[in-house]
Length: 394
Image (tube, rainbow, N blue to C red; front, side, top):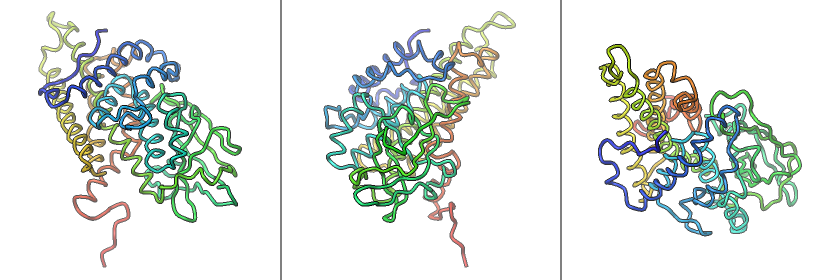
């Protein structure tokens, strides 16, 4: 298969800086050369290619927007383009980097002490250490405020009790950023692997995100030192700020999956000969599907770009990110479905990436805020009335 050359219907590249394009091209080459040859087997085996982690560290893919500790301090558009190219490879690859960057390094960097930053940012940046983010629980996903995990003070320690579910990289991680209820409200904690009372186990039987490790974390009278708390984490809002970082990356990443599905279907329909000796791309029904895909991908590109520019100006709001995540993941889901239809039986085999993207996007459609929950976030912003717990009108 030829290397990917990009999807750009309306001269999107003219709006990018040379640095942004260079970053994208370097990650594109890594995905094409190192990841694409192995992803089908990892998807079959339900494994993640850990041997590629050092190379990702060398490319500064972890914490790329941080400008300390030797990291490049890229702008948010460049970061988004990284996510796009990674998810073009596989949602599991983008999830790995997204969790490491937005859900582990970001909270430690933004809410941690200097000692915590010095201890963890360098090894996380190089990939020497892997991190995970513990917020979602077996009984609470869309309602994180209902979490049951608790942390209580006990002398010069905290004692954690509870469980977290659907945790990317959970059993791989040397460090977990864990959120818990305390007498002082919601706080974030840095918990190291090997701490007594801290356990992890893998989720099995997944048909989606197979090339990604998904785990459950358990805390049973898990004693951690007093300085394990993230000192600037003083409420659930700080956990949600982490999610906003990750959702921003997903809005870009989903476009990568959509692009790969579209390009695969386009190439296939131009080469597949049926009926009158003509490629099926000559038929109206086929062209309508392809036209829909390229139109929605193009709209998603400009939405993502504007989010990135607003983010770099400090003007991006969480409800803007909800629109980006909601729209672009939906577009990727529809592109995967249409591409599978266009490819017939060949669309369900992993000789082609479409069915893998189609399965993966089912998870991305749900995690980091479901499609419907993001619709409610947008609705609350435009009406001024939150419908999660709608106020009663007397």
